[in-house]
Length: 81
Image (cartoon, rainbow, N blue to C red; front, top):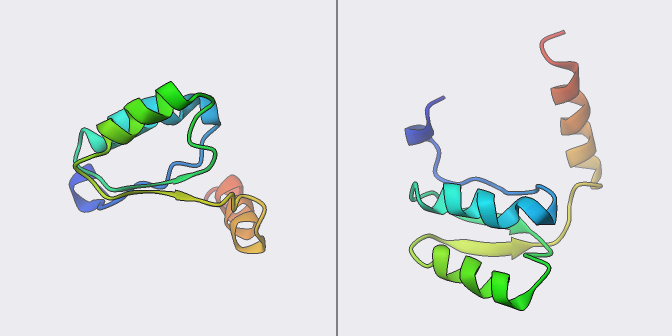
């Protein structure tokens, strides 16, 4: 799959990486649902909101521990085995 085939990227990385990943994603015109918290500071969060002003952007509740995501994680970690 190429980057052109992707409409959105869910960012579920550690909070310290959110701003960097948001910049990379939004600059390519990709929509961004992001797991909370958005950032550790209001100032950084305000910058991030401006960066995402031309794409659809939203904050999701943490879902990394949901049963569905845990199952996906296990499948991905196994690779093609």
